[in-house]
Image (cartoon, rainbow, N blue to C red; front, side):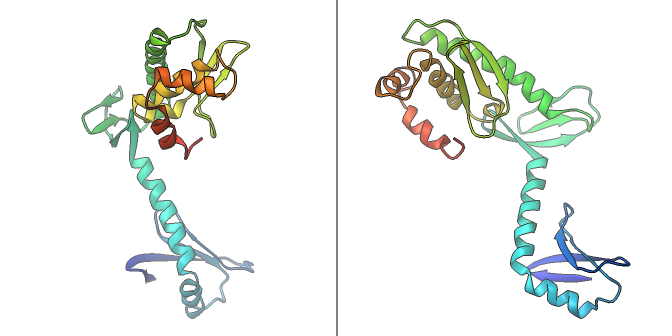
Length: 213
C-alpha cells in the first residue's frame, strides 16, 4: 500500500496482530509508515487514519530524516564531512569525507582528537592570559547544557566534547571564559572585562553559542 502526503510518496506497511485492540501508526528509520492493527480493520479505515494524521506523519518523517542525515555526515572543527564506509583499518579524514569501517567508533576518534586539540588550545590561551593563574587540570566530557565548567577549588576546567565539532574560535572563547573564573568566580563586570581582554569579540561568539547554553 502506498500513500502520498505533501508530495512525498510513502510505503505503508500494515502489521495485523491477533488480539491487538488498538491501532498504532508510526514512521520508522526506513522512512516508511508502519501501522499495527487487528485483523478486522479495513483498508478504508486505515486510509482515513493516515488522512487524519498528515501533520503527525510529516513531523515523524522529518525527525527520522534529520536523524538519518546526522548519521550520514558529521562535523569536525566547524566543517561537515560525509561518512564513507570502506575496508580500512584506521579512520582517515579527507578533504570532504571521512573514511572508516563499520566497526570503527567515531565517538572514540573524536574524543582522542579532542584530548589533543583541547590541550593545545588550552596551552595557547593560557600563554596569552593577562593574569597569573595556576595552570588548571583538564577534563573532557559530553555535557547537555554547558560548554564548559570551572571548579575553582580544584583548579579544574571541564570542556564539552561537542566543542570538537565547532570552529576553534568557540573553543578558545570557552577556555578563556573558564580561566577567567579562576580570577573571578562569578559573572561580574570585572569578569567580563577580563574575558574581553583575551577574546575581544566574545560577545558575538557568546551570542552565536547561546542556543546551546
